[in-house]
Length: 189
Image (cartoon, rainbow, N blue to C red; front, side):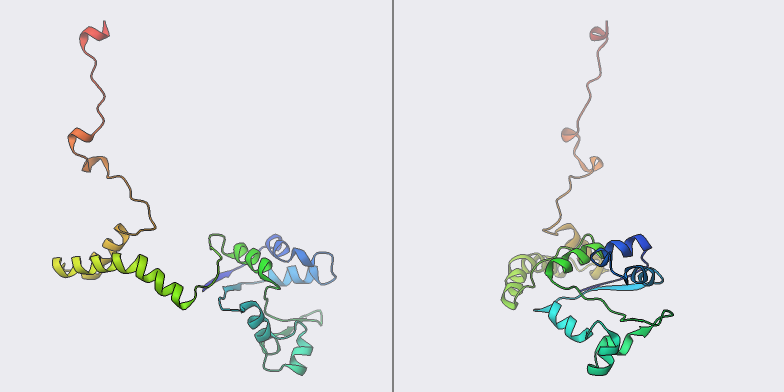
């Protein structure tokens, strides 16, 4: 659903892995996570957390290589200069952790349930089809030289999720504009 490449500072890495604070591997984890760029992904599927954790395999790379050689951690885990392994991947433990971690990397993302097929179809019929139908009808009637730009501008102007902005003052008719009365000479005295 979303992808972002980011380089964490040690403070950000410590905040992300604050549940590991106090464990012996915490300093190495923070150092490793802030040593270079990482790719943050948001995945979406039914039972997504469990599916991703199954694809990753066990957290211990030696165990993954021995018993789950096809797992992602078995393939991409690597030995560090300290002799231990970094498994190369992270997956949320549960839904509350997933929401916290998604907002860590994607603060503006709205996390909600995945729509079922009938819900998506219903949304399209109720909210998208009317706007798109009138836009395409207008496009066919007007036949502009740049049809894609025309349709894009139409959809932007008729987006039901955006507030309608008041017209600019230059577009207002003179009778609708605010006027400051000019003081007469009599009222100034």
